[in-house]
Image (cartoon, rainbow, N blue to C red; front, side):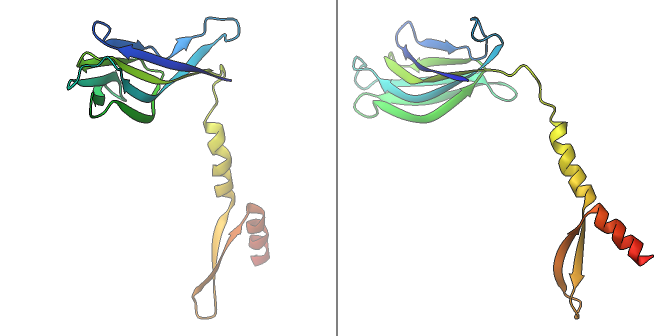
Length: 170
């Protein structure tokens, strides 16, 4: 079951940094295992108290596949761009730090926090591949030709069909 929560924070002045921690251990009776989390950011808004002409830049710092990265998310300015729709910018499990790196804000960031209890049993991925491999081993592709030697039809023969074909030929 997925639990969905509204998520929002404000970056301004001395509180110019916010951290989302992501992956957590469940701490209640309803959820007993580890929790998988996802943060979906949808919108950034420049507050009505923002100074005219001041650029407000918000960056995110998080782990990529191999290293920590910092990337600007939005650049907001009174009189030009007061809000930005982020679509559904997703961050999975790994902690993310949001910083107001330029300007004094306030910048309001809105989105959703989703949590799901992870399954305790591991699924053996090899089980899924074995059946397909066996099917391929059991089939032989035969191309028949017409009178002029042009390919006519492609046909699949199972192991049983191959055996009966081999016995007829002997």
